[in-house]
Length: 274
Image 1 (spheres, rainbow, N blue to C red):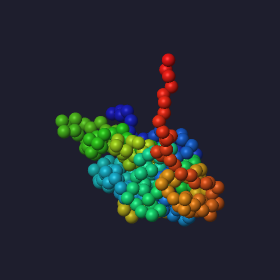
Image 2: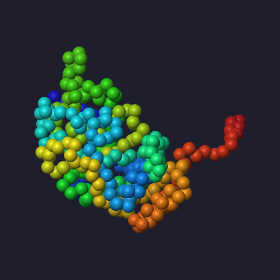
Image 3: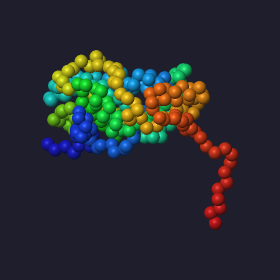
Image 4: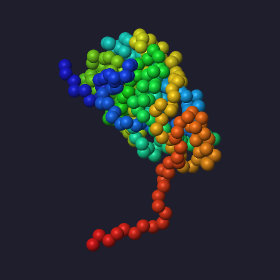
């Protein structure tokens, strides 16, 4: 039986050692990481980047295929390992992110920071630091609706027909199938335009989910950080604190406020169309 693959992503190799991508390769030169100011300060000063297991993501709906039992799936043995993930975006303008990453927080955590990252250099830095893991990069899949996601694990529909999506993902099941499932996200979050990085243990037989993360990997932000912006409501003191943290790390970037809601004051007059 032949399936037209729309959702399952094939694994392709980057030139860099231990670096791979899933499906269509993202060609953006730059990607972005949103963090609250406190977390950004810690990452910069400690020179680390955090990866976590998908079962710790805030949206528990996303963990359904990570936490699922694959005991009845032929080919699953060795292909459903524990993984660590880091979520970034290829969108430079994301109003929701500025709100979400500081929502409900106090102090330094009440302000969001956007880190502009050179994607190739970031990939190389993580792959070099994460010994014993392979790095996989993939664009998040927002194409499936809630009903399709909720019933994806079922081979047959209520009417008794075979579920085409089930066959696409679980026929000839392999690591690409598994990682493709971990790239599925609800359509309500399409605006995030997320790019996910997975660290997969070299030992494919490992199966101790819940025991890996979070993990902080040593990286030199100077090697891949291109620009830094902070939410417009930060104080001059907080802006200075961030600026000093960058200088201490010998990063020649002066952080700037991002005015999401900036607009000209006063009324405008539309030109004549005659």
